[in-house]
Length: 317
Image (tube, rainbow, N blue to C red; front, side):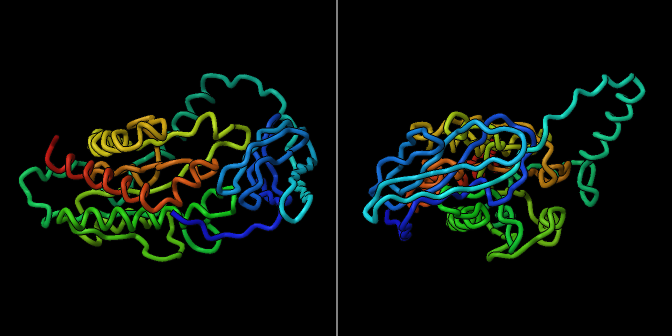
């Protein structure tokens, strides 16, 4: 595995300059420096640096303007950088809603999480008796285009690119098993959220897998919560998610915590007709997660696990 970047000073990738955060009391900060530097100081705290030059810190913040300062001593001498961003004011407590308001809010939530309006209401028969060459899988590399970057790694690497690399690796593995594969995108382009599952129907597909990398909320420490998971919305999606999650667990159990198959109301999974799931492969917002996503050998192992999980689902294992 090789790394091909040069960072001549300490840098902060997240928060972004001038970013506005909701009210939080702590903030997760990401950045990088030149490989070989062993320690970065952020707000007076010594922060370990990974071999890639990536670092992460968890610092106290306050309402209003905040300035984060990071420094290091490297081959080019002492380097200092800072980043200013704003934290919203603490919201005032709201009165408890009456029962009528609660019912109205509940009904609104149900409408938000309705199924895809172009999907049928009944699940198609499971394709146990069909050969791999008769099945088509849609792979959906999440995000894409000039504005939908997804989350950002310590070196400023965008999730949209990590998702595409993983999708390409999964496509190769599924193709090697004999399956037909369609990609919602094969380059860096923007695709509207609800347009992505339409590729199922345009290609007569039998399953849909959306590929992502994760990020914590602004006030959560990714180093403490980093995990992999596969999300679905309904029983047919859950069967696919469980099969893939099981194979991912086997492959990554020594490296990464697994939350297994989980339920979520994601737009791309709300399909009662075709099994659909969304994979969060890792947290690229953590230095170890960024390095793992960069590692082509590890990516190939993960892609093989996802493909084998799909094959297990196909065979009803």
